[in-house]
Image 1 (tube, one colour):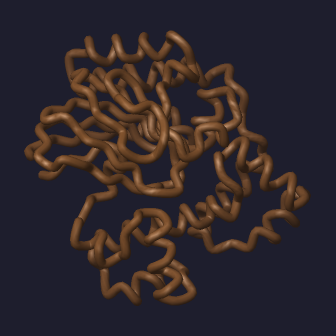
Image 2 (tube, helix red, strand yellow):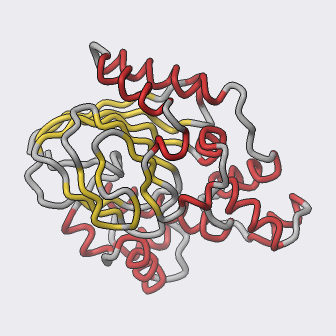
Length: 270
C-alpha cells in the first residue's frame, strides 16, 4: 500500500498528550498488528471506511471514533482498502482527565469514544472531517481536547510522580521504592495506579521497558542479546517471554514482520 503520515506534539498539552498524528492512504495487508505502549489512543475515522476489530474485545467496528485503553497484548484489526485516520495518543494523565472515569475499566478493551464522553465525540468527528488541511485538523483536535481538560480532575500528585519516575528510569525501578517515596501501601498504590494509569505500577514498568526494547529492536541497533541487556532484561529468555506476552510473537518473528512502532494503532505498509 501507499500512505502518508504526519504528526504534531502540541506544546500546550505536554504531559497530557504524547502526539497527534494522521495517516492516509491504501492498505494491501488483510490484517494489521499493533503493540502495547503504555498510553491510550483516541482515533477518529475521517473517511468513514470501517475497520474491524479482531483482537482484543470491544467495539467491533471503527467507523467514527475508537478509544483504545491500556493493552497487555496485540491489537489486530482488519483495515479497509483505503483509510484516513487521525489519532491522539494520550498519556495516562490526559486519558484520566478526559474520561473522568477509572482507567482500569477500559484496560484490554477498544471502545466507542462516545460511550465514554457523550455527544461531544461527534463534535470532534465533524470538526476534523470538515477541516481543510492536516495542520487545521491538528489544531482543532488540540483545541477540542484542551477545552475538555481545562476543568478536568488532575491525576494525584503522588501517582503522577511515581509514573514519571518509572518513565524516567525506563521501567527499571523497584516498586517498594515507589511505595516508600509516596507513603502509600502496596494495596493503595496498586489501586490508585489501576484507577489513574490503567494498570498496576509493576505492569506499567513492564510496558515502559517493553516500549523501549521494541524501539531498539526496530531501529536495528544490534543483536537481540544486546537489545535485551540495554533494555534492562535479566536475560534473553526473559526478554523473549515478555515479547510473547505483549505481541504474541518472539522478537525474531516480530523483526521478520518489521512493523514500525511510530504509529502503533493504524499502520499500513509503505
